[in-house]
Amino acid sequence: MFDYHMHSTFSADCETPMEKTIEKAIDLELQEICFTDHLDYDYPDKDWIFEFDLKEYDRKLKELQEKYEGRIRIKKGVEIGLQPHVLHQYEELMGAEEFDFVIASMHATERKDLHSGEFFEGKTVDEAYEIYYQELLDCIKEYKQFSILGHLDLVKRYTTEKSKRNFHEIIREIFAEIIPAGKGIEINTSGTRYGLEGGMPSPDILKLYKECGGEIITLGSDSHVPDTLAFEFSAAILNLQEAGFKYIATYTAGKPEFHPIDRII
Image 1 (tube, one colour):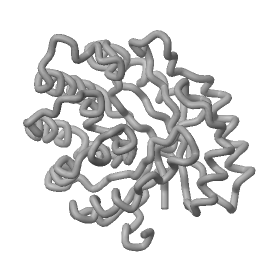
Image 2 (image 1 turned 45 degrees about the vertical axis):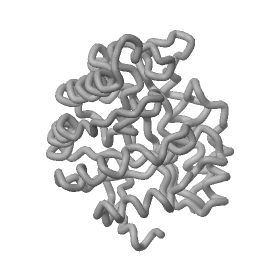
Image 3 (image 1 turned 90 degrees about the horizontal axis):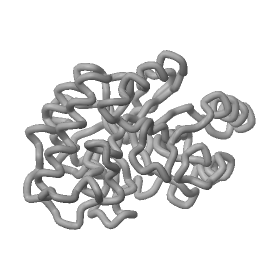
């Protein structure tokens, strides 16, 4: 099994050293993990600085890859926070750094963070969702230096009111951008930890991705502590199978590798 979304002390919102996560992953008999620490340029909440020392990150991962060689495979990833005005910074980043895997996520919309609720003020839930998905679409029309989109429907995590719309029309446009470009999505299992009915994206979006021709999908717990590694992966795999997926992807040097689901469960 593979967990391709996790954080360490390199992320501002995590206090778990890489070693503790790796040891837990070995206990769980995971074959491969990928650290995807946060780089979120110009994050609106200035109490959180989601940037870190890239050279030290590279050095530390190489050290741990050597230390745990033969016990588990450790990949170098990053989770970048999309906003239209910082895309050029990520272009510069990808020109200067090498990653096995890059998650592109949207944690802020209209230069307002989602978690504080400020973005939702003065909007109906439908208006907020529409703006979120449109800004995500605008970003990926301009920027495609990533492997997969992270927790695509994250906006639902921060609203108490549920929308009656599924927003498939605009999500279909998003898929029309990423699928021909060889980009995928993740199934992020952290949703139920935050009170949602399931992972992100929801099963209807997974099925839409498949209908649109999407094949590249990774599995990630979005873990910030060791105990949530591989969180609810069995349920996630069932959702993938029900949606018609037969493979889970891992990455090396930015290239996807496909693993039959029926061989890893």
